[in-house]
Image (cartoon, rainbow, N blue to C red; front, side, top):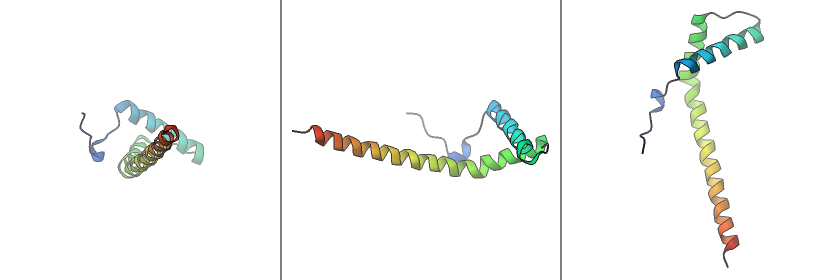
Length: 84
């Protein structure tokens, strides 16, 4: 079984970083009508990666756990529905 990485060790690939920087640039231009430089793009991306990503990641884990729990409850109900 593959060992889980610590959340602080999860990093984006170079291609993912470039795509997200372009998204930040486009979003900033669309919303504010201003160009955003490469340094600002990188700073925003680092902010998102360091501060926001762990919160979103943990929320996704909580949602997955909740979904799995509901599926297990359904399995239990389905089992007893078939039980004679």
